Image (cartoon, rainbow, N blue to C red; front, side, top):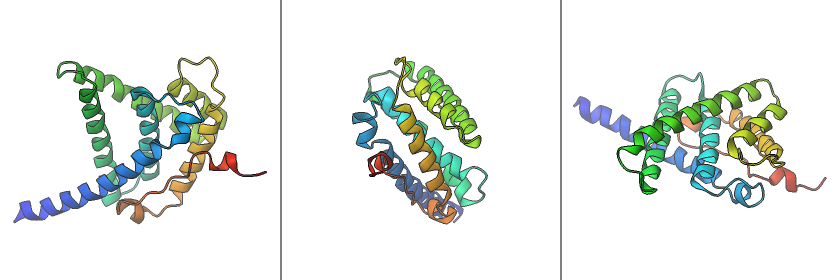
Length: 185
């Protein structure tokens, strides 16, 4: 009996997490990031954008209780399972995956700390610098970092306005990347 009850709850959370994760992945794959803003369309570039979007949802859910807190944890678990799966698809063997996962986890949490500090201080310059350092470490100068920083701030505000109940039900909305820069003045 308990397994049936807990199994239903786990399946419900799984469906919610799957729905949220699919929407996060779709937001991270917006073409403008790669075509107009010069985010590298490589496994590492896609990791950076997915990490950024996962962070934005985690930032929104931080401090929530109940189902929202559970969904936040399951979402992080799903993200790292997806990264593990992607590494294996790239041909990295069982011996190499844990080492790379440890490195990618450090990268993720280091980035979230930098983004968190910049967002908390409402410092777009620091946010753009952190994004440039993480997304385009090879570029001496990356002018599109300010566009991405604007998007991150807009996404953070949009997520903050979304009811916790909606997020806990598997519904999340991100802004369309580049929409603000395309609007006529």
